[in-house]
Length: 365
Image 1 (cartoon, rainbow, N blue to C red):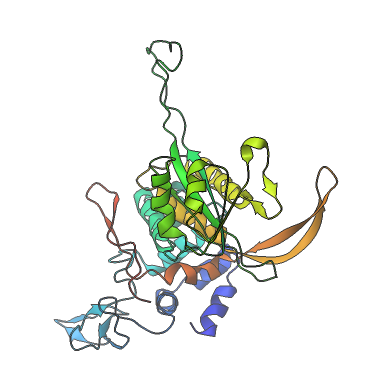
Image 2 (tube, one colour):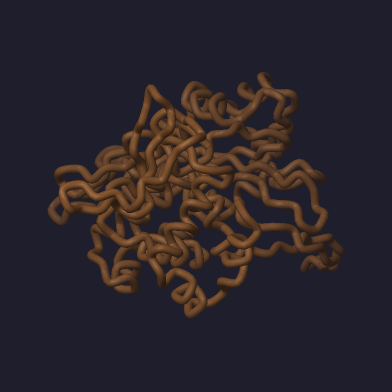
């Protein structure tokens, strides 16, 4: 990515500056191409790094679309644009609307609901809903977590509504309304250091079928590297899983122990709280079908911070502690991290107005 593109994005701080930067469709296309292809154009079909621009060609008195390219590989010759094989594939919306939507979604600390996004952009609510899911699909990360990783379970949802004419509950568990809470496994990677400019670690979460060892193993073995130093509470499933990693330390919440020096899961607890506040305050409800997509967005926001310094604070008991100060990465500078893995992550509209994920893995780039 050229320095001029970074300068353009770095100068976008306010809504007025964003609207001015994303006002021209041709300029927006160049910005998007620089973010999707920071090292030059790549064919989304075969990954070949040489292509030619198709411009000024007349076919049946029709001119080719702007930004149309053809792969130079003799075996491929695939024609593509910057949105081909991305969540923006075959979009009917101008690219300036897409970039404005991405900026607005990243500008809010906890995101923006599809209703408010639709009002701001002047599009329909279903369209804004799919635009939000396009962002969530692009910010998903596949690399394994390493270093020191904290893991913890938490629940989302609440109890089912009690029927008006339902009989009163009997003794014990008889007649009780079953809960609709979803068990979630969260993983937070600690930052590599505390020096200014250090980026925050990644944070991820996914719905699990239960709190069993097998359910936790299926998630952790695909997300956390075996050379990781694991931190958890005293749950039996976590203690058994910890034997497979380079190191494993626990805190005993049941005994009132929440931190023992550097041994704690406070980062994961903070991320769990962020998930709950985001869902309760912005989205109000998420379906289990799309929950992981929302977790991708919340985890991406968690990681878009850098250390700015430290300060000494006193606790309510008078004990001095060193607190790390963080600063959020400006939303415009988050855009390159969003679009760098867009190729290969395809999303289509389903017949009933929902979405169908064609691929969740970035193929090239």
